Length: 199
Image (cartoon, rainbow, N blue to C red; front, side):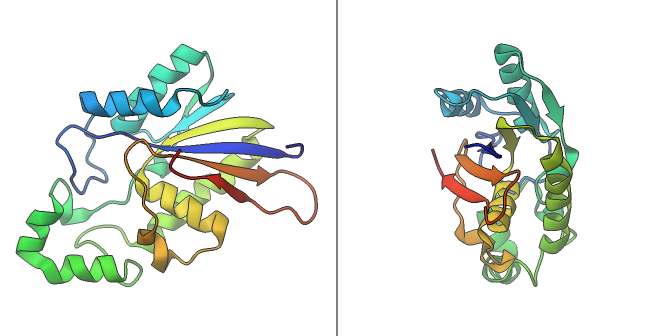
């Protein structure tokens, strides 16, 4: 559409070690995760550039794809996942066995509570959206791909849809989930839209 750009948001695939609370922990993709990512981009694009979190589960695949497509790749450390503090590297089952009350409180109200020693959701959203606001003027017309994390995608979707951060965990973002945003770059009365989710 004229005076707009398309932005595809792609979550990383499964990481080595399986399903853990993994924010700053820099695990690579598992073999299954690589397959998930390659399947997720089949038939997608064409993209004129890729922006990736600098953590390996995003950056390694983004580098492979940028080489294959011969498109520019940019790294964005502000799009790292939420820092889960003392929950890093642990399964939900392990945390529930030790402190079910704290994890349950976080699930019910992620704005008012946060992982012990971890990042507050408001601080996380601020850094994600500050990078979003910085990148938008740099994105020329066409289609861009962001290879990022589930929490980052939730924040961006909530921002575009005008959702409260308190409802963030209602958005399911499975491994290698691809969503598409339409972002107006000029014109009155145009609003950003979510065109697809989970493609």
